[in-house]
Image: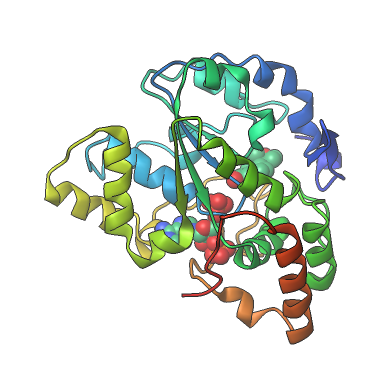
Length: 293
Ligand code: A3P
Ligand code: EST
């Protein structure tokens, strides 16, 4: 990737702000051929995608920690819409992945390639409260250099609330997928629940998959997917990405992994502004978030 393409402004894909390099690859993503046994991991960015991906790979590998270190998480669970000049796109990677495949996406529900619905694929969606998402995203904008300069936190808060961060409105994303779960095979999970009781959430996933494992396997899954374990695991922590693309010295990918870090960042006024905005944009939904534990 040429230096000149680092930190460019986002483009727009059907009204959704997105990296221009991804938009260039959109025709291939739109026509992606899902397989009936594909499992899709869907999230708004910074909502626990990597955590859920590691949990899913551990389940698929029957709790074999060594097998889960066979490759970096972004290769074990290919990122559907990723497209960077010079390296295989998500679609190309997936073509060469044997079934059953795990697939990651951040696409809003209306942009998911039709094939996933036609093949009736199982989908696991994970949502996280927006105050922690915006803080996590602010640090991610700094360390993942494909992003435009986020400016100050006050500025980035406005970008996020206006739906102008990459992948667009958080509200539309979480609400769109929430509605879709009524008609499709979608397990809708929350980051906060996973923090509070990971064992219970892993069991929900196993039930959704119709898979039974022995108790020791659940134990190993939980140990290997704890924040501490993932943070020091090079196959899970993104440290294998070139520094030109991700600078972990600016902020590590696995940064804090807690609920309520927004309290260390928001001013009282910013929190009030956020609460008003949230109430307006979440009116009329039965979808609720825990902002702290
Ligand atoms: P923070 O920046 O708040 O620490 P994504 O994978 O969707 O990009 O989400 C990244 C966020 O998930 C980061 O949040 C990261 O620390 C957190 N995360 C990753 N693995 C985790 C784990 N095992 N437990 C808790 N949080 C985790
Ligand atoms: C990594 C994880 C994630 O959930 C979202 C994104 C979006 C932008 C991606 C980045 C990522 C990984 C690194 C890149 C970047 C676009 C260019 C860069 O190479 C693929």
